[in-house]
Image 1 (cartoon, one colour):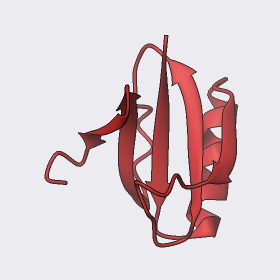
Image 2 (spheres, rainbow, N blue to C red):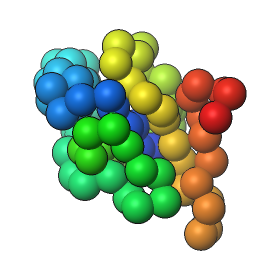
Image 3 (cartoon, rainbow, N blue to C red):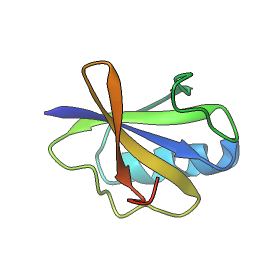
Length: 79
């Protein structure tokens, strides 16, 4: 299992993402965005799983996975 982090355009979007993920049975924690990622709203969601794509991309700024000391961008690929 890996840990994934999603950043958002607004705090409200982060709350909606967490609610929708929980409805799918995925435990999500809202927390401050790591400084290395920086974000518009300052709130991110983290979850553990075998896949990062939960199908919940509305208002998601980016999805990341940490590998050692660096962050790997998973979605969108252009970052």
